[in-house]
Length: 331
Picture (cartoon, rainbow, N blue to C red):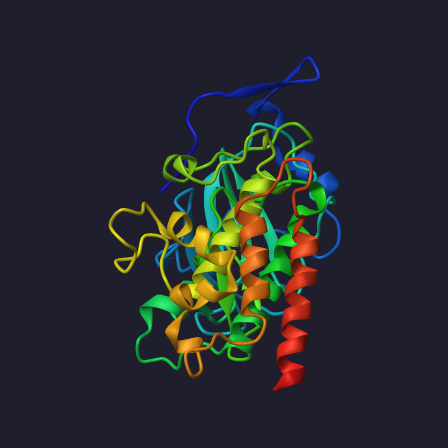
């Protein structure tokens, strides 16, 4: 977990050096608009019970804590009263933020409520949405009813819409996106959480995108300095896991194959072979559901984009919407 930043870092942009000394509460305050609230450190201490309730996080770039605030004023309340929040603690950035770029409010993402800058530490405050991560639905909840084909398509399309909101600035929301970043509610609505604010608010040319070392082995896109295409690749892997019901490194994958992507990619192109990799829980009389091959082709395009003809997340979202509409209409 990252905490308080040490030392002074700087980046060069347009022949001007921006350092942490440029980053101040005044700079943020001037650019804050809409419903984003500026919290004091004492307010967050009160709201989070002195940062005692640490929440699990699917990422490793910060600590997160659970708390409670008033639904309208966002003033701290007692535990269990009002609106549940989570607070992410991380080191500050090397440039001035411009919070008016995005409001971070969309039906398919957890809402950014505000922030607090205390010395050299930044606290981001988000709403805490009840739900279960997609990977838990697929792999860690054996007592749960398997996700239906329609439910998987609805979740995938909602997640794609959330990423589409983030990609407006041509920057990725995550360093390594996966199913743990997709919260699923009772109605199978998807909400993306734990997104990386400093990626999304970075000035043009100053993306903080950096692939995890393990993911760089398989899944890095040449010439993808911004990281957007790598995030689309990651989304393709999520779709593949939903299609197959298998993990990236699953025990059912033949030993001579490195991972799910390498093993399944040759099989996705042929509809006859689809049954070999399809999640058995989705098949009826040994036949994959209608639209499964269409989704398989979409996965292939995410995993093997042709340079200059890369899919955008908007195109992926539209394709998933069509798949979902065809499925619910046929049912």
